[in-house]
Length: 304
Image (cartoon, rainbow, N blue to C red; front, top):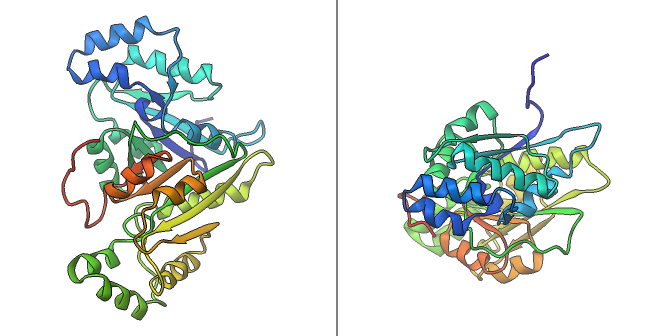
């Protein structure tokens, strides 16, 4: 009988997104992969500290039970295979049932997203994230120095999403960029009953809803839309979600206020946004990732 990941929520994640390898990465970035390999081998018995996306992965894996394996987490890493041993050892130390991984020794691993049929890709490498988004996979560049998730909600996976260019297309954002706030508000008011096209993370939100409906008594999902929109532009966003038959638990229409402090109160395990300014505000309080899509991301910005 063939093995398949069909029907599972598949999360592909780099080793730096899952674990704190920032000290080791300094050697990796110097181009001395043999020194990096030796360091990781010397530290093989030392579990790596949890990284920015650790809480998200740990909680999603809690949806798996003896009767139903609903979530699969796969390592996609630029590490070499020898260093990959430490990644798996660290996962085992924390009780994370991660069995699959690809280690490409400096080459981009994003191409393996297609055979995995991944629902989400998290990586510290912006070029890999851009390639994944171009291939239609929801992806975000993890900010390795983001605050880590709160432990206040051990039985909830909390995920926050920006709206335009993340859950939704960048149609409205293009109007704002070209014509300003007043034109944006009028555009959205006029089109309130016309659903926005899907953005890159709409499939992930839909997949999370399916996972939530499958249910487990030990873990649930709570989602939030956190957007710079304000009334009257709020209505089109809500009606779009209704048209998709997809729900969020909370919606924050902040009208340009900084998102960071609101996210601090929501306490997400991860926040996704297309604007680096919003990510930098959020990263002071919560785990955050940059979705390099839409009109605000025409070319590669600098890596944080």
